[in-house]
Image 1 (cartoon, rainbow, N blue to C red):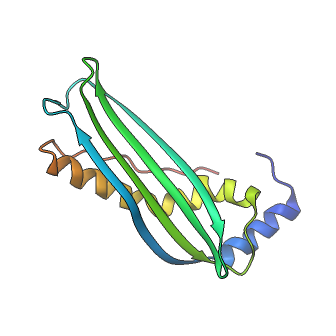
Image 2 (cartoon, helix red, strand yellow):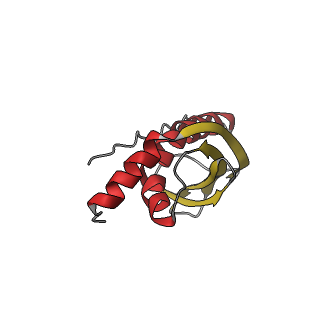
Length: 138
């Protein structure tokens, strides 16, 4: 997405005035087929984001859907949703959020989701699944 200079400056002001207020896990589920084995699996990871303006800034919502599936149909799945409340001096717009969600938001929440996946795989009797880090390149 090519951004004009005026927008880049406004987005920079938005980021400068941004403060993280709270992170909440608002939904979490894990499901494992009883005979699931972690060999020969295909991993699929999807995320969805949205936001809602608040008096002090905005609340960002991000949900992750992780599916490990074997070719015989056995599955292991984790779904987790987070609410992240931010304070900001510059009101967020839809265009700002599209950029923010793919960069700053995911960088803020990814460590929490990685830890959750690690813990839940161990609790499910599986070897710990360590998700990769996210690399942002400008």
